[in-house]
Structure formats: structure tokens, C-alpha cells
Length: 103
Image 1: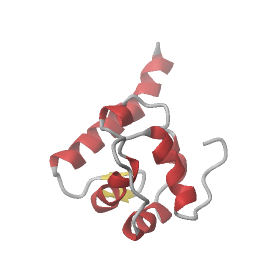
Image 2: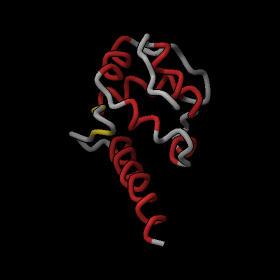
Image 3: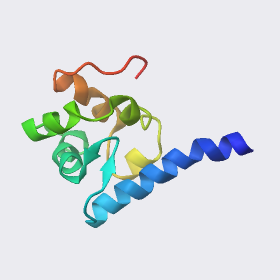
Image 4: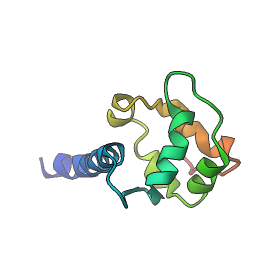
């Protein structure tokens, strides 16, 4: 039971962080991406009419913790926010960044 609780803690923390970003709170970060970086990438990962990542998105992604971001690939959180996990996982390659192995 203790292991299951520990596995859910990062998902809960990320959910709170993303909800805070959507709610407009300032100085929120997720995997070393600040609110501006997350907002810049959102149009590229939404399920309806995704666009190519913008230069500000790629710049933010270049300093992000990609391994951390990859950990949300199978999270229920992404689809609930209108984010397509496959589009999100394709961002590093579209920004000419090397994604982590096994991501």
C-alpha cells in the first residue's frame, strides 16, 4: 500500500501544478518549465487542431526536464486537460531535441 501511495504523489503534485497554471497563478513550474513555457506549448499538444511548436515553446522545452515530462505520458491528467500524450511526446523531436530513452 505504501508503494502505491508514493506512485500517486507525483501525479497529484503535477495535477495541482497544472491546475494552478490553468487557474492563472504565477510562478508555477512543472518539470522546469514555467507558466509561459507551458502556455507556449499548449497549442502544439491540444487534441483539436494542433500546430507546430512555436520558437518560445521549443526554447522552454530545451531547458525542461524531459525525463520528468516523459513520466506523464500515461497519466490521466494530460487527456483531462485536452492534451494528447502522443503529441506531447513528439514535441522534443519537433523542436530538434533528443528525447530521453524509453520515453
